[in-house]
Figure 1 (spheres, rainbow, N blue to C red):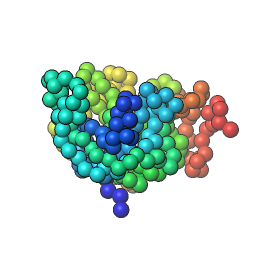
Figure 2 (cartoon, rainbow, N blue to C red; figure 1 turned 60 degrees about the vertical axis):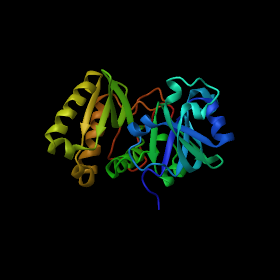
Figure 3 (tube, rainbow, N blue to C red; figure 1 turned 120 degrees about the horizontal axis):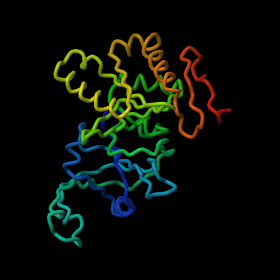
Length: 272
C-alpha cells in the first residue's frame, strides 16, 4: 500500500550528478534543504530525478528512479576529497545510497517546463504519472479538485512557486489565462477559523494580487459537497472572464462550459 512521502522527486541540474547516481549509486541533498523543503517521512524509499534544461532532449521530465538503500551524513569534502576543504567543504549533506538506476515506464513531463525543488509523492503516483502535476500528493482536497481539472482538461499547475518581495508562496493551483492568471486554494476552513492564519493569508493574497494573481478560495465543505454546483462553475466563470485557459502549445485560449459531458470542451485552434 502506497504511503505519502515514500517517493521523492529531486532536481537533477548537472550531468555529473547523474553520472554519480548511475555509476557510483549515490545522490546528495544538503541537510538544510532537506529540513526546509522535505517535510514528510525521511528518508524516502524511492528517489526519482527531475532533469532540467541542461539535459536537452530529456529536459523538464522525470525518467529515472532508484530504490534508496541507506542514508549517511557526510561533509562535502568527504564526498569530493579532491576539492578544497574550505567553508563550502564543511557543508553537511545527506548521501543517499542507491540501487542501480531504472527507467520509468513512461517519462513524466512538465508541460510548462517549470522549475521545481522537491516533490514528495507515493510509489503509485510515481509509476502512473503522465505529467509533473500528477505527482503531487499534498491533500485529498487538492487531489479531488485536480481530478476535476483533468476531466475538464484545465492545464493547471500544482504547488506553483511565486516569489514576491523575497517571500515565497506555493499556490495549490495556478491557471494561466489569456488575460490574467488565477491562484486557487483549498484551505478555506483554516483561513476563516484561525485569525493568525487569516492575517498571513491576507498578506499573501495582497502580495499575489499585486503581481496580477486573482485568488479563489474554497472550503472543505464546498469541495466535498458542492463541487459541481459551486466550485467548478465559479472557477469556469473566473477563467472565462479572463479570456479562457491558455493551453500550452495552443494559440487560441479555450473557454469552459462545465455543463458539457465529461471530456468535452470548447476546442482550441489546433484541436481536432
